Length: 137
Image: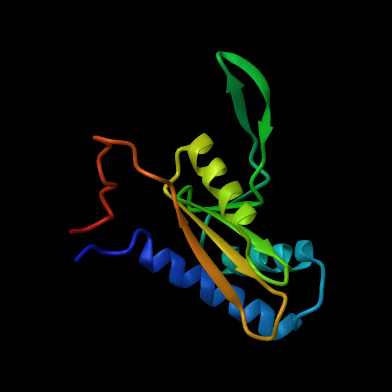
């Protein structure tokens, strides 16, 4: 059986998100939850990069930049949302982000309801690509 990529960090982030939601309650703009998460993650000693820009090229030519909301510990994209439910478009967006910046895991967080929802999104593996060191067999 395989372990979960960034299991401990995922737990910390989900715990922070629950704490933020419990304090602020549902119904606010997603940027408010994002800002509160940044504060709480930093209080807990986590490194948080906000709105880091990644260049996107097509056939060797720059076509724009990709800007994920949060990257925690240079290891995981965190994308706070306030939506009725996660859609295939949310997951596809995270896969695109992971493919561009080379990270292995994104965490979608939904602050729409009283109960926090989350979804882990893994970057698809290419044939012959090694499993990351924190993915234990």
